Image 1 (cartoon, rainbow, N blue to C red):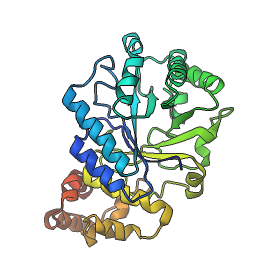
Image 2 (tube, rainbow, N blue to C red; image 1 turned 135 degrees about the vertical axis):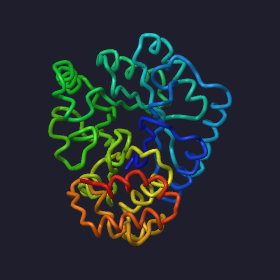
Image 3 (cartoon, helix red, strand yellow; image 1 turned 90 degrees about the vertical axis):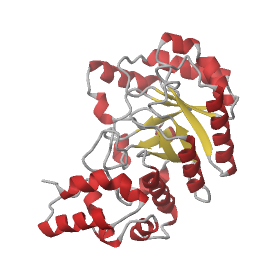
Length: 324
């Protein structure tokens, strides 16, 4: 795969650079080779696109890119220039990141109130022609099947996207839904007439920024493995919980080799045996029907298991214990 890795693209508290370095170190010695920096709460990527971070941030970001390069990981940046004043600063912003060593720019037009495909594609074309040393890709405002029928504007946008998107450029797609619980070749059914070989799968399966009562955690059982292997690029959007995301790195790295069992990887990341036995509770396709014995078991796990990852999972364990 040309891009196989992580997206820091969630809403809510962003990672600090110390955590980002930890994640890059986790990716070293694996097949994971790409990290898209696109936190929704970084104002300089979206709402304040026309402004730039201070020098201290720039030093830290340059060090981040350097560390990633040493670990065999390419860093991409997601930019969302959606206002006229952003477009005026587009060249400056691309140069800003290029001068720090970033050679991958994703134009991300997801989750916008106003959508204008013509302006978006003009920026993409401008970037490709003016910055040949930069690899540009694109996230359309309609990036999954469920958004196509959101309203007439989204439907028209999507039909126009199919007709006008460049055949030699890569684009993001999340599947049937924003958070898809099944990913196979069927997710491309609506992508008629477009070069699907350039599709980058953006997988939101594990994200928690929609504030779910429980989060999804399986051994990537939502994926059709043959389909994933047929694609050029596959990226997962992270949770924002550092220990959990390091666990996801290990599970993702195991996708290709399949050398270790799901249970072995969970144990290596600190889960106790009782919780591993109940890990199917985090499968979104499994109906939760807890017996009183199961609830007591969860209660004991919560008060007898001590580990950094437990601190991240505590609210979800509490919700499960009280599930009705």
